[in-house]
Amino acid sequence: MARYNVTFEPAGVTVQVDPAEYPYGHHGRPGSLLDIALAHGVPIEHTCGGVGACSTCHVIVESGWENLSEAADEELDRVELAPGNTVRSRLACQAVVGGDVTVRVPDWNRNAAKESE
Image 1 (cartoon, one colour):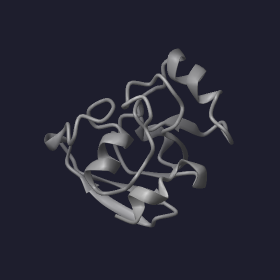
Image 2: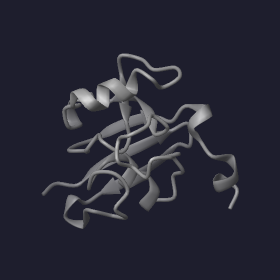
Image 3: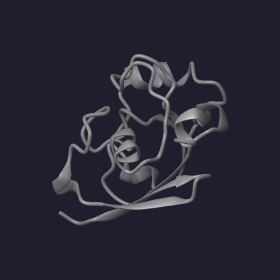
Image 4: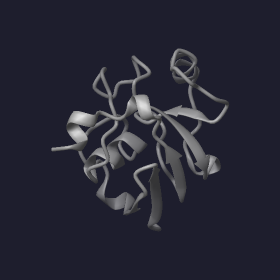
């Protein structure tokens, strides 16, 4: 399997992902944006534990939309509940990465207490 880059903004963190290492930390679906982020020290809230039952891990896809798994209806229903959602919004716990992608973690989604640890 090919490696690819996942960039998390505004932190400016880009990680090289090797799909052979999935799952990283069992946060969300194996190989999800949430799984990758938490394994590489990028804090994203995930109140429900990454099972797609809330919208706290909402991210906005800036590029690489086509390199993410297709969103299920259940995910889209949850995304609609996220503050500041856009047509490029996804739940980080459900969006499995398959190529280069850049996402923006909204300000309200980042946990400042965890970021300062």
